[in-house]
Length: 446
Image 1 (cartoon, rainbow, N blue to C red):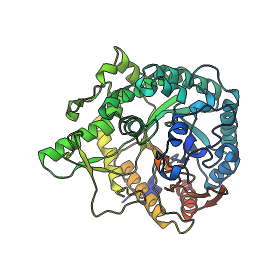
Image 2: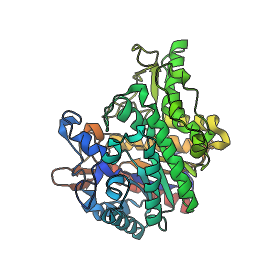
Image 3: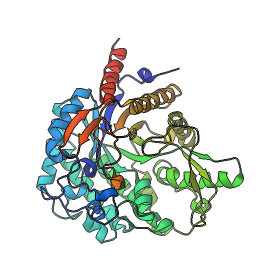
């Protein structure tokens, strides 16, 4: 049975973060407000009224955080650029101080031997664009392309690969359909145009990045979907959920078409947002790699609420994280094999751009996180042994951080952060990951 030491030579080891979750400094250096600043100020929107105004203060403390990365022995660091820090109103004049911050960050990473992997959009849309319709407005896709051009022209000489979007499924559903994330709209299936406009933004930006000789990835949260039973109703519900969660955001990019959305059986039309030529714009640039954020599988039953075509039900008899998510490591292997079967030659090389778990607050011991990471890396090695081209693994996350609607209550970090003092304390999982990376390199050197 392969284990994590059987991952390929040259396999990239990394960690991942996101701007609003760690940077803080929301009113410094010319940064404009984002939808998350606005949403966090809404009473009751975030648990205990927490905000990302300070977060991990990474804006000021990034040298300390890079020192932690160097000690881990990382190959790469996946972070996101805060769009409103670079273009405070989403378009128009560039904020020189914002660009300078990312210049300093990239240079410091490279000096430490760590390859930057920036994500252009990790949910913090400039509020000025949301005021004009946000991702429901087609024009936002073109503003994103302008922003991508600014970043590529500034950093492309040092940053070879870019991720356009992070988890467009989660942003569409939680931000526009359910309203539990920023911008807090509760449109249900009328939110589908937001999905198309994000994909259009990806396609436009990918073409511009490729013109500059840069590699392009897209990262989505993907989940293997299983029916709660073999009944036709449960199987139909599972097919509907798989279409919405996985295929809606993968088929257009890899296959050049949308899946059949009639399986959703609900009001809400994405096709009204699709203009002639859009699918070519989304598909034609191609992907140099597919980023997969994996946390758990999803079990689906026939709906009890007529407003939805499915119910999400718990997976019994498995451990759960502090967030209540089921822990099923082998589902990662099954997901990767399913993607290979589904997309064949259209599937590019894969990078796991997020994988991790929330553990109850403690500095040490941290055994549940170690067990989670070890089991998922073993499952990943098994997928590689079965023919999946996997290039790297970025665990979520380097630091405990602002966990969106949960505020500071869910701790995903390899490093404990005291949010009162900003003191960083590496956890047992940090030492375990550092030792694993060193042992993997030694294994291949021998």
